[in-house]
Image 1 (tube, each protein chain N blue to C red):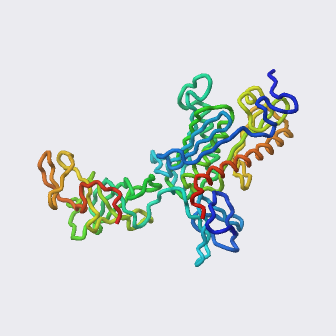
Image 2: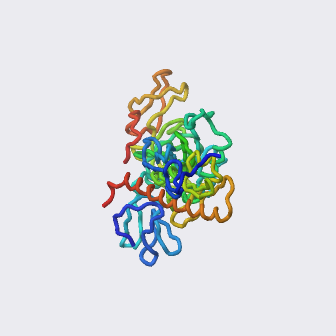
Image 3: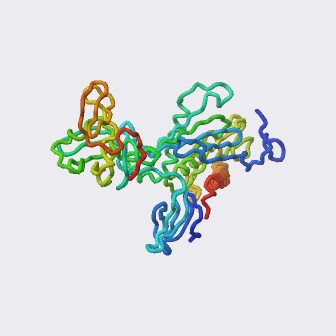
Length: 237
Length: 192
């Protein structure tokens, strides 16, 4: 068993159990996309782009009552240590699906019937927590694209390593730890948009982890806001 | 209510329903009004409506009065169907329906017996949207509207303007169209 906590509850990378990794968010980085965002979360490097709402094709996938949110999560072949075979696999198809559903929960899709909103999430460098980072980046890109939303969704993971509930797992903690709990919320109402769990936790630990993940989400939300306000600060009157 | 002129983000509370009504860029839940986009908070004091004026680019929804560039897809007895390719001065892709109908009464100022005299399938035309609901309708009346690029019906090579007619440089055939005054200049962003 690998030791994941050094004494006094400090983690291998020197963080406290409830501390996030370093996060950098930049909105509007791509010129040809309608909205975009670049995000660095620890060693994760993610680029999100939003296209549309645009005509949904082929026509039979159109919904005459609302827009389809089509998120595509893709890991670059060079994003992990061992070269990943490019293209969608079982894992990325699942993440694309849960991301689409999480984003659909906040977008006013009924305003754009028969259309499709494409969200492309490209993972350029991966180090655990990419689905959370992807949703966080996609939210900023959607806001940058001017798509009406109830809230700015945000995601963060919590988990359990060496018997301690910790926030924002690194890849070592994810692999060797006991559990991982990614959570996406709409921060204003704390409505849960995505929650998955890998591993085992007692109910008490789960509640503690969820609480911690929500706290983490709130912190990341502040950084999202800062990124958007930073891009559009010239408009302040 | 927050101060007018402040930059707000999706989910920011801007007012309550006792003060204002929810307008563009906002939504209302349980008596509270929130912003739904990134924009500047404004108040329409005449109607007491809360508005958020977008500062990002916004989804492109076709509305009445838009100048559109479209391709002729189908010609019928009473109307023709065109597919919108571009809206003048707009960069984003169109959100929603792209097929527009042009009725025979909106083809040209003069009397039109047959739409085929004025437009042919595959022509690129400029028109103005006159109705957005329930289906898109446009007009090609007025001199700036009409064909901006046409192809020869014999050999599909581009036609060159010669006075009020169009001539094919390859096969030499001469065709009639309802020509826009800037035929062949390729200015797709020309507004009104």
